[in-house]
Figure 1 (cartoon, rainbow, N blue to C red):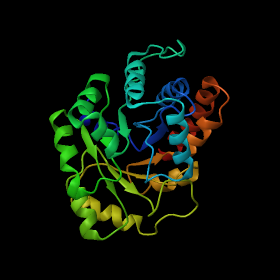
Figure 2 (cartoon, rainbow, N blue to C red; figure 1 turned 60 degrees about the vertical axis):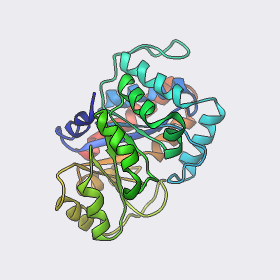
Figure 3 (spheres, rainbow, N blue to C red; figure 1 turned 90 degrees about the vertical axis):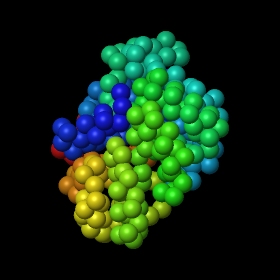
Length: 272
């Protein structure tokens, strides 16, 4: 697996990209959900490594991070999860063995998590277990090289977020984009919402002027209608809070897999 697998994921049409907080409500549920999302046709799956201060997140994902950490999920737990789903073998608990997951996987976490683990060691482990890219939402353009340079050495995509700001800022970030451009639908934190920035078409056009890297819109998308609308503007859509909320409410890993598998199929169909 490598960063080229991320870009290739957009070759088959519009991409549905779900996000999961690893370890919420438990790691067995996360494994079952990742497999269900892959089977449903997700183009890329984002895996959130829990952190104590997830500043980009709204209440749903913040609370999921708290629960995952309280349940004992660590960075190594998440690496082991990826190793197991890539191999198609059961993880902790000995259940849910299935076909190996070949869908591109991207970590989304925070700089302190990577610093604490060691940037080089973190990227090396990503390669070992089969992760293709990294998103650190709070790291600005001016400070990304410390991470992006190590990612590049390991053929990993360092994926940048673009928010609705000035055209100059948008294009400066887009020029250096890898994997895909993560276009934030509205200023603020993640979370389901009814309204989005009104200038997304203009922002997409500004990005297209300087890069041909695919664009995926995220933050706030939760329904098939919203996904369909956003997919018409870009190359894919990212859905997080709606998935995290459903996983947290499930009574068992099997129920979470069934519920989110059906949800993902509807979203995949909506973005096509």
